[in-house]
Amino acid sequence: MKVHLVSLGCARNRVDSEHMLGSLQAAGLQITEDPSEAEIIVVNTCSFITPAVEESIETILEMAEHKKSGRCRKLIVAGCLPERYRRELIRSLPEVDAFLGTGAFDRIAEASTADSASPICMLPDPETPPLSPPHAPRVRSTRYTAYLKIAEGCRRRCTYCIIPKLRGRQRSRSLDDILAEAREQIDSGVKELTLIAQESTAYGADLKPPINLATLLARLADLAGQTPEDRRPWIRFLYGHPESLSDDTIQVVAERPEICSYFDIPIQHASPSVLRAMGRRYGPEEIQKMAAKIRSAAPEAALRTTAIVGFPGETEADFSMLLELASEIRFDHLGVFLYSDADDLPSHRLGNFVDEDLARERFHQLMAMQAEISRDHNLKHIGLSLPVLVEERIDEQLFAGRTATQAPEVDGATYVRSLSLSPGSFVRTRIVEADEYDLIGVPE
Image (tube, rainbow, N blue to C red; front, side, top):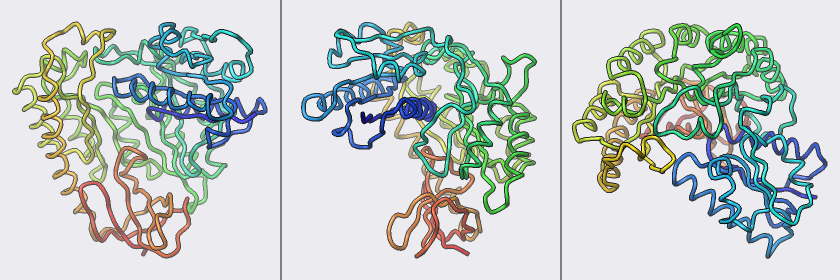
């Protein structure tokens, strides 16, 4: 049988999807990119915010059409949407044959072969299944880059976030398991390993004895350093937290050339009152000190963050504090989210909601300011010679790739003008043009 899988949401979901594909392939199913050819269609969903819920439902209904017009005999919905809404989905989505929560990814092969007249619902406790072993079957969706999940779940209780309910408490993988998987990925030709978790900078705090992200990064840098220089992969991490970013982690990133000088530390806001309402236990002074410490240790580092506008109770004065902080720190990359409300979030009970049009106006104001800051940062790259990981050919004379200060999928790209380059290779590139988000260069 043929199976088609649609993966929605973040990079953490991507890893779950790749493991599900590995399990299905190991069970004898053939993977197809064409849903009209598939007897089984799987949609791995996201339900983090309202737009993600809407996208998930739209995709499910779109895939359900293949049960009428294609070869599809079974539609499986997995991940965060069934975990969040559980059995009420059965009533609202009768087109679906099986629902798998976030604790049931390892049962995808069972769900694909089960024969049942009524919908199958697999919703175990998200903390029940063991973390993926290093050699678990996996079908990567990218050839030269790979996400490496180092922990699952979250120990925090931010009032706007549903993740602890969907994924459970933080559970870190062992250092040995991560290193074994990293070696396997590097041996397969991966040129960039991106560490991900709900809070990557809290890695290892729950292990006995505890270890930290700095230790893991140093060991991964040692592993990468054993690879011939022309094939030596980049190491980077995403999804940090201001409270758990340690001085040791900053130092190891600054000292080890195998680790990208890149810090992804979502701050979410700058107003003390909004941060308290969010359940974030720091203020603007701590954020400024963190940024100064990073830039002192690693002046060439890129600093990325995200912020939420329109949080319940956010006043014009609160928003001005966010604008001021972003203007002072001048993040290299900044993503902005509109607050997304739902009645199962603690923040819903705060009331005092911000008008949607006003929130959107603040969104555009912050993004416009950041575009100018990003342009200024990028213009400073003109004339520099930087290594670029080439990822794809755009046309006969143009290739797309990234520098070490551009993370996959969330930042801009570096376009290299050339007649012949090899995707998956590092190319020393002289930057000749820049705009708000992208760089353009030529090989040296």
